[in-house]
Amino acid sequence: MNMTLHVTDACNLACKYCYQTRTPEAMSEETARKAVDLSIAASVASLKCSNLCALSSGNPADIASGSTGICFFGGEPLLMRQLILRTLDYCSSIHKETGHRFNFKLVTNGTLLDEAFMRVVDENGIGLGFSHDGLMQDDERIYPDGSGTAGMLDAKMQMILAHQPEVMVPIGRWCMTATRRKLLPLKAAVNGLEGGRQRRRIGRRSGLSGGDGARWTRSRSAP
Ligand code: SF4
Image (cartoon, rainbow, N blue to C red):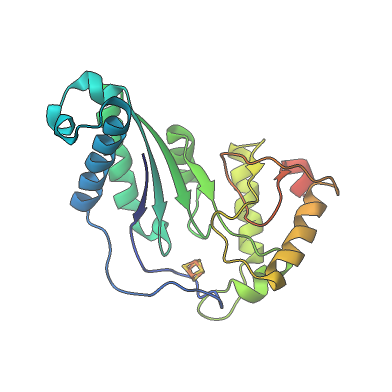
């Protein structure tokens, strides 16, 4: 089973097209743990039985047979970094105890990614997803003071590439608020990264969102 944890409504950006309702609500660690437990139970159920009564068997063999996908989402989920770290620890302890497998994703605006968190990404095999509006990035995805984020994101991309030198750029409908005005310059930007060659391939690692796919490497993204 795949589950999205909407850990916060808060965000440190003020994108012009943002649809996110801002509230002070944030997910507690207890809720995150319960959601993980529920997701494991559902994963095991989908594999092992159609009888919901079996969910409560607690049999390690049953738990070990499943896998669970968890996506951290917001708002900006890295505002809840401690919650994410503790949830990863919780999942790790379950894996050590039962063998149950997890795969993780994080949909972020990229601003709060740093070396320390990239090590967490590496250790846990977290797939990163973030939006890049191509030539519109500085115009559309802005800080509350109105300044753009293109330079910041370029630096983050280089940091990510240092950790994941052969990442794939999944260009799909995954996490983008798509408009024609945004898609056309984004496609042009991706074509530039790819040297004009389009490749339809969806990767599991860090990425942009748009309409097609392209391999993104340090040499192709370097200015
Ligand atoms: S990064 Fe996402 S949640 Fe934050 S302002 Fe932009 S669109 Fe809204």
